[in-house]
Image (cartoon, rainbow, N blue to C red):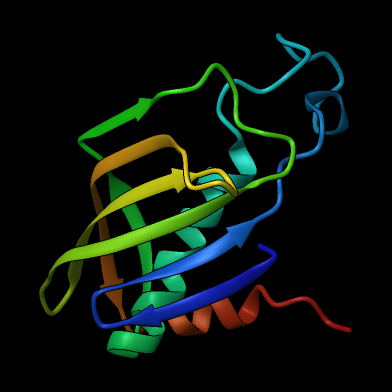
Length: 133
């Protein structure tokens, strides 16, 4: 993640870097390039964790999505902007629509029906996974 642009009770927006080439992550990738950028997609999940901490004071983990549609052949090398609109929140769950756009604002992909579970006990698990500097 490059930077969080802003957040509110309604959602969160951030700029994401692009993933390195597949050969940088795997010895023998099935393709030379990514069709869907895994770093940008993971960035959206990480942003929902951040939103849940900021808005509800508890961590979250993704549990599913109803639909993912991509409108470009591949994500741009320059990364993408992630726009998350939280549509539903309960005590232990949240739902959102996630848009991935390029730096000119063109819609690259959309994930509908994103679901996550929220639980305060996740804070301890996340803290145990922090990098030591």
